[in-house]
Length: 363
Image (cartoon, rainbow, N blue to C red; front, side, top):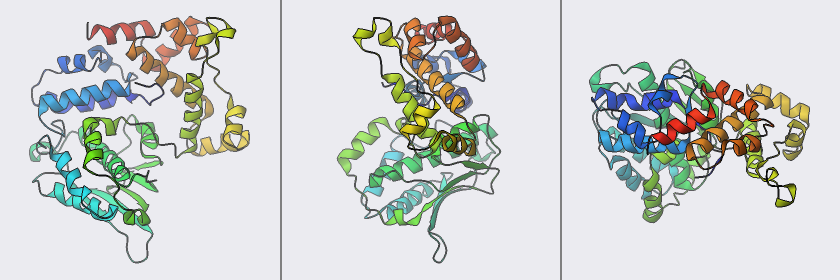
């Protein structure tokens, strides 16, 4: 698995497990199958790699026999998502496909009530909305669980819609009918636009011209999608639509570029993490413009540099092959102790303890 993918917060891990807990399943073996240390769940700062999270979702699917992992109103039998995709494949354009997919899920009592609104009059926006509650067995769902189901439904819908037409669909806005969760800063990279919380309903807007785009996928390409869905759709690469994501992309690529043999054995593991002026030049803007745009998106160059290093560190330690001293050098730390301090600040644990816990899960 490649490095450089955005890590997943422990809040997502906890929320994903709640349905299994409600069903009375023992979650420790599920975490072990995903190579996620159960102890990690006690620390709010902890994060896991996308691969660990995808393994957990797959294990939960099998254990719950439910595509909503036991989090929804009713059980969604394995194969439901696949049949929805098959139904959408026969449509001439995206608008028809999305409407058919939404209609398909409305056939199930207690299933998600999804709707496509094409915009009134000459409005250029189309809106995809999630209506109604998502509580288990008719009850109101615990806040964190209903939030996670709503977020996943919107995310999977957005990514499947883009897959159907073979294009990435930029969202104009995304809003959620609940207060900001503890991991609110993760929403912008996931959806490619700043989120609004506490809205009257959960919905996303996009240019309605996308609705006329032809469906380009077929049953053969659907098989490839289904091999990794829906876990793969939840942990897929970020879309580089915001300036922050473009900066993240430049920094992540730099971390993978290592020195040559002529630089000596230890230099081979060292990456040159570019500073702000270098990144600005790469993005063809002035350093002042880049600073201003990042500030407007609610972040800074230093913050992005820290999250890229953190995500790379978590992914590398979870994969287990790279020596910690080499990883520290590659992330641009001149001393191991500085890396240990930074990793503890990011995740609440040391690199060695994190690797030991992760790898002791499958010995």
